[in-house]
Image (cartoon, rainbow, N blue to C red; front, top):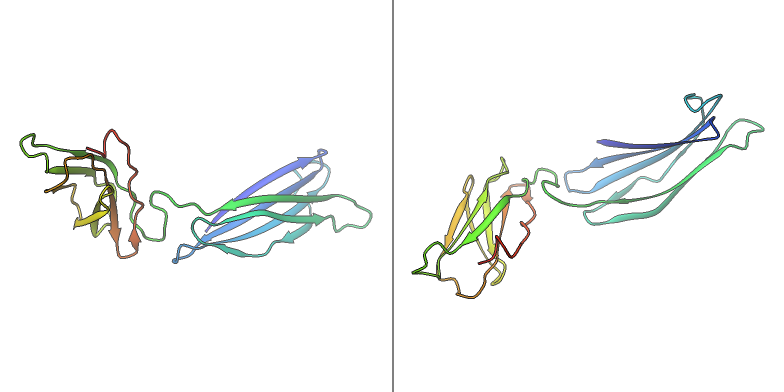
Amino acid sequence: MQTLTVSKCVGDESVGELTVQLQLRTDEMVVESPTLRLFEGSSCLNRDLDGTSEGIQQGMRPGMSLTGARLSVSNSEVASNDSASVTFNLKHTTGPGVGAGRPAEVSGVVATRPDAADPSRVQVVWENVPTDETSFQIRNSTLNTTVSVGANSTSVTFTGQPAERQCYQVRAVNAKGASDWTPVSPTKECV
C-alpha cells in the first residue's frame, strides 16, 4: 500500500489535506481511497481536525484514469465558514516492472548481422536486467514472429531472415506474466 498526501494552507490558519491510499492487487488493479481533511487553528501548523470527507473507493485497471474526482469538506464547528475542496485526477500507468510479480523490463537490446557472408543471420543481444524470469521472448516486429529462450539468456541468433530491414524486441516472462516489450529505435534494434 502506498499513500499520497498533498496539503495547502490558506489564510495562515486553515489547511486542506488530501490523502489518497493506493493498493496494487494481484490482478494488477489499483484500488484508490481518497480522504480530504480540514485543519483549522491559530496557524497552519495546528493539527486541530475540524472536518473530514471520505471519497468513494474505486478500482482502476492498467491504462485507466480517474478524471475530475471531487471532494469537499466544511468546518464542523458552529459559526465557522471554513471549508476545503479539491478536484484531482489519477492514472494507472504501466511501465518497467509494473505488475504484481511480473519481471522487470529488459534493456540494452542490439541487433546485428554478424556474418557479412550470410546476411540472413541476425544476432539479438540484451542485458539480463530481471532476476525472476523463467524465459525470454524475442520478437521480429517486422514479421511479427516470436521465439523463446530460457532464463538467464542474453542472446539469440535468427537464421533465414529477409535481407530487408528487420526490427527486434525482447521481453522477460515468468509465471505472473510478461514485462513490456522493449522499445524499437532504428539505430540499435533494427538491421
